[in-house]
Image (cartoon, rainbow, N blue to C red):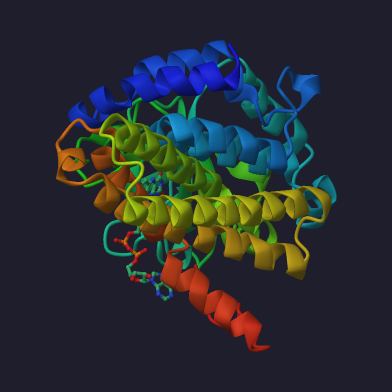
Length: 380
Ligand SMILES: Cc1cc2nc3c(=O)[nH]c(=O)nc-3n(C[C@H](O)[C@H](O)[C@H](O)COP(=O)(O)OP(=O)(O)OC[C@H]3O[C@@H](n4cnc5c(N)ncnc54)[C@H](O)[C@@H]3O)c2cc1C
């Protein structure tokens, strides 16, 4: 099935999953059947071998079909993409064990075979501030014991494993490591997600009291979480950007449909709102695609990273602004439950709130614009 047909099928189911707040099972059946869970996995391991630019294109198309599904997919792509793209020299330089390559390949191969990964980073009271996570780990004879509680875990209860950020309980400073914790024993999902927007992400709470083996430690090295946020900011800061440009495109599509059906398309105010929205979305798409191209061609450079932060800001703000304006043009009938613009208005509101929030992006970029070091202040 091509991406357009897949996005259309997702779009036709989006309202149902939004109302129930259930995980979009049928969408993931389709994504799995299309081999998209292996999108970021290298070809030698049976995957699609996609670049960040190719991921961006896919996420944008899926986001225009069903934002919530595309967000869960983004979490999975962040885990597999970061693993697939992390420079091997860097990992070795930081002392990764010989077993690193084999355990990374196992995780990626499983994704190519249809395994789904979720991200369990955020916690109640601290949001996504990695340096402040309270979930902790300690060494055992066979690996690690991880204890704590996570929140906002998109796809909770449906993932095969969770990327968990946890602090070393024996370290004085913030020594934060990533673990890939398999679902099952010691991993309890507590239903807690009844949110304004992106309801079908099923972003429930996760309680951990898990024993994992040595190879659950990502990269085989402790204390890499904050480093990875600096070295590969695209996966933490801007991979959602493509999803929200997709959501903004859906607003234009459903807006035009509604306005034409209602015979409102000749009203000058309505046309002006659609014209502005069209230009805003086109501009955001260009910023996001340019950031993605730079990540692919020149990852990690200061100029690339600046575009990464611009992409998140442009996409988050644009989605919310065009959803607000097009709903106003469409009128009160479009705010009835079940109307696509009503759902998109709520979904689009989430973009600026996801980390890095629009305010944090703007602060980072403002520091840059004035010649300051934007990372002087700890962002995570
Ligand atoms: C739809 C959706 C899906 C999500 N899915 C996942 C998921 O799968 N996994 C996961 O781990 N998390 C997920 N999250 C959670 C998300 O990553 C954030 O952690 C969460 O939104 C933080 O919420 P918070 O209420 O603590 O707000 P915060 O992000 O803490 O923000 C509160 C306020 O503080 C400001 N602020 C925050 N940080 C800084 C800073 N460094 N400097 C200055 N100001 C700052 C913000 O701008 C905001 O005004 C999801 C969130 C949403 C909305």
